[in-house]
Image (tube, rainbow, N blue to C red):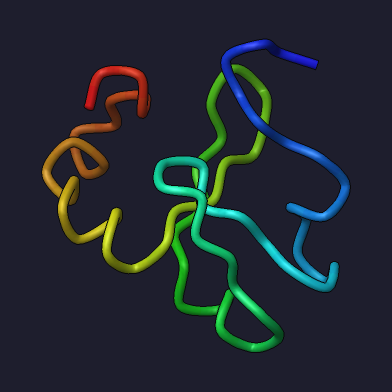
Length: 68
């Protein structure tokens, strides 16, 4: 596991909850469909609506979340 990320089995789609890689917010059930998914260093990272909106320009510029 990459020490810079906080991934576990529960962060994968279809699991009970997904955790925002930025703020730690949890999505329950269908809520995760509105979240942003990014693949960084070969690992999936999920970001809640608030974090994605705050960092939209960096996401569109394809900057890894470590830059924001």
